Structure formats: C-alpha cells, structure tokens
Length: 493
Image 1 (cartoon, rainbow, N blue to C red):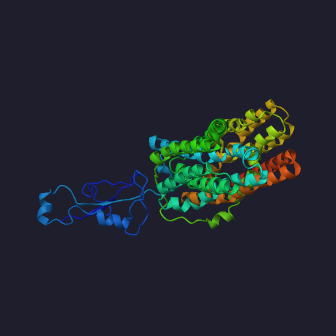
Image 2 (cartoon, rainbow, N blue to C red):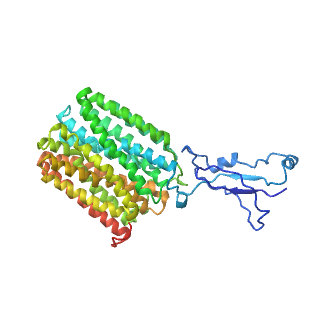
Image 3 (cartoon, one colour):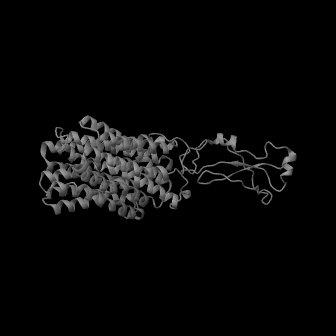
C-alpha cells in the first residue's frame, strides 16, 4: 500500500480541498503529520462558530479508510489516498487581511448602520434633554435629566467592553440579535413613559445596554478585514453615527407636535428596526482568536502609550459632551435663537461631524491617527471656550459647525489607535474593551457634573468646565503620542 499524507490547506473561509500527493515528483519533500492538539475555532462564510479540530477529525477522514484493498485498487493506482485537514488563519497573520473587496466593504456598510443606531442615538440625547426640561419632566433638575443620557453612553461603552469575550467566543450573531432587540424594545417602552424612573429604565438602561451589545463587535470586525485602509474604513463606518445624529433629532422634533412624544419615539424605534436588519443580514466574522482572550490584558498597564491614551480619552470625554447636551438649551434660555432653530443645532453639529469622521481618517492613514486626533481634540476644547463669546445665530452656528467637524475624531480614530498600539492582534478586542471601559466613566460623570454646575453657576462656568477638560485630554493624548513614537512630530504615529 502507498503511504498516506495529510496535506493541510489554509483558506480564509475555513473550507478545505483535496490535494494530490506530490512525493513522486519531489522525492525530497518531507512527510507531513496531522497536528491533533489544535482546538481553535473555524469560522464559515456565514460567521457562525465552526467545529473544533477534534470534531473535524471525526468527520474529515480518508475516503478509502473503510474500503477493502480490492476496492482501493479498483479506484485506480494513479492517485494516493489523502487525509483532508481543516485549518484556520492566524489572527496575527497580517498578510491574509483582504484590505478591500466586496465582503470587506459590506462589513463597513453593516458597521455604518450599527454606528447609526448606537452613537447616532446617543448623540441625539440633547434633543431629549431639552424636550424633558420643557415637557413632562419639568420637575427634574438638568443634572438629574442628564444622568439619563450619561448612563446611556456609559452602558454603551461598558457593556461593549464586557461583550468582547462573547464576540471572541464566536457569538457575533447572538450579540447582533440581542442588541437589536433591546434597542428597539427600549424605544417602544420609552414611548409609554410618563415618569422619570420609567424614562431612566427604558432609555438609559434598555437602549444603552442594547447599544453596548452592538458597538464593540461593529468596531472589532473591521480590523480583521482592513490593515493599511483601517482608518478610512473605520471613519466611513463611524460616519453612520453622524448621520443618525442628523436624522433622529429632526424626526423627533418634527413629529412631536404632529403625533405626540409617544408616537414620535415609536417611529424612531421602527426606523432603528429597519436599519438594523442590514448588519444582521450582511455582516460575518472572517477570523477569531485561536484561544479565548482574557477580559483584561495586564501587560497593558505597563504600556505608557496605551494608558496615557485611555486617561486622555477619559478626561476629554468628560468635557466633550457639554455642547452635545446643553447647546440647545443655552440657545433658547439665552435668547440667541428661537426654539425651532435651536432644535436644529444638534443636527447641524452631527452633519459637520460626517466630514470630521471621514476626512481626518483619510489623512490619518498617511500621517498616523495620533498625529490627527491630538490637534483635533485641542481644537474641540478651544471651540467650547468660544461658546462664551456667542451672542447671535450666526456665531453659534459657526461654532457648532467647526466643533462638529473636529470632535468627530473622538469616536472615529480611537479604535485605529488601539489597533496600532497592540502588537498582538489577538488582544485588540481586549484592549478596545479596556479603553472604552475607562473612557466610559468620563462620559458617565461629565454631563451630570456640568448640569450641577449649570444649576449653581450658569452657562459660563459650564463652557469653562467643558473646554478645560477637553484641552487637558488633548494634552494627555499628546503624551501618549510621545510615549508611542517619541518627540519627532514628522514620524507617522
């Protein structure tokens, strides 16, 4: 009988093919043995969990194994029996990343609509803040109302961090289904709310938790499809949050006078349901880490660049959302604009943010993401200070436009920066989760503190608070850039 050889083949989809034994034409070729120890998961074309290698060994066998010698001779003597082996791509094998193609760009489309319904909804809260203060929550303080939006943003990041290991375990579709359900269900429940605690449960916890289940998987999957184009791919996906931040406030503002708050929120829920069908249908996992990743990468705490960047994000986000939450209320109470015009300020901000999440990311692929986010963060802080000098419609619109452009990098560039700082790509999900968890506390406490300052000292102190923290965050991020690549500002970082 001729010798049997196991010829491993590697394909991105995890499928396998037969290969002829080439030992006759190449006598020096060594025999290859099957490695029984590997237990990493394969991912099929639909993004589902594959079988372990042990299982595949039971089903992928020599097709002549159970045949008699006579049957094997009848099948022909010109080919050798082959054992088919299922193999997977190493997540650190950068050369295997498609960096383009139909499937890769479909993940960007799917992630676009995840951002549309996560950060897009979070960025809409300024409209809810104003509506609650002049509507059915007039008995609640601005600080108490801002806790709803802060907890919503906090859960988006912290739940996202906690679901990272679930994503790595292969439950990508379960996260999409679960997150989509709770996000839509939360809107339906919010439409029935009449009291503060009901709004807190429906909007802060239900919608925030659902958004968290969708956010990190939508970010992490892009890094498995793109390498040199990662920043622009992430920027295009993140621009979905800006589009959501443009459309949702307008829909809410226009529908409330016509159909009431309840039906306006229900319609937003139906829009979310329709747009979430797209990522549920088109997104799939290409590759997963070979082993279960830890929830915490302890080596990251010894990485000065990573830790400084996380602290910079924490401080920056504490101040960043002052404009998102309080600009409309400021325009109305200070009689800068009428109430109708004030409701469009948030849409104007998010419209400018579309360009702020694409153009800087396009440049970042050439200059480095840290070299872009630091000056953009600093300019965002300066523009918050500029709110002190605003006295008319033209002034506030100009400040809002520029702020929307420069602040867009706060959401679109951090995932790219974390990928660049992580040598082991199998730990990208872990470090993304760690970074978002740290930053989430800045989002949680920033706006309620600003609301308390507003009650005690007025809007002037709110803008000083927001501008100072945002500029301080930019300074700390610059420290991360120095720790990562040094003082030479001409080096890509």
